[in-house]
Image (cartoon, rainbow, N blue to C red; front, side):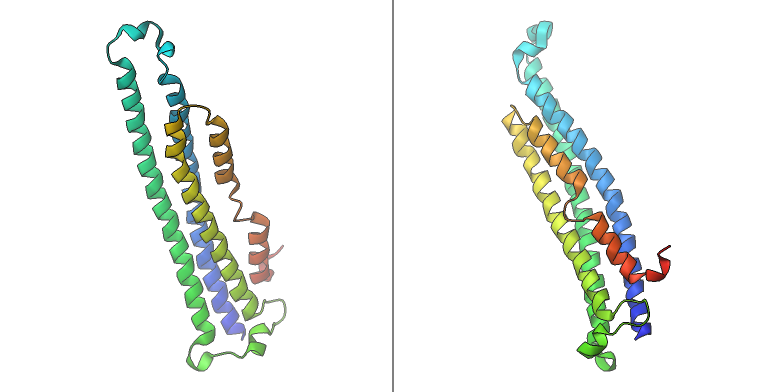
Length: 200
């Protein structure tokens, strides 16, 4: 049984690596969102002719500036979509780790009874605890990925409003920063349970 738990600990190390990639993507997405937000806020100013002052006499200036900003926004949105694809890759990878971890208890001669699954050896967690923790981490990342999809898909709509929107942008940014579906304390508790020997 202890050997099976050690295999699960290896799975958790793989998940931790994937979560490291997730954090890098999170930093990238926040940067992209800030850049997109800046453009959206500018759009609210540049579509009003009174904001051009003496430049109003330049023929087509408003259209040219607006087109350039929209082009920049489109480029950033494409980058954000690529980042979301990378997030999805992390989710799929965690899903595969969880799927593989289920096979550890289902496969052939290693099939374990319910009683064995819940059996704990010393301070090490039970196999059932390991499985539950992995499933929970998978659910957290899936939910957060879907939230990020929703936030990014809301950006073009806010940009098209060309009025208000600052509060909306701030609220969306805060959602991205907080990552409400991945509570840090809960994640830490899961890893502390799986690696009790590493708790200082």
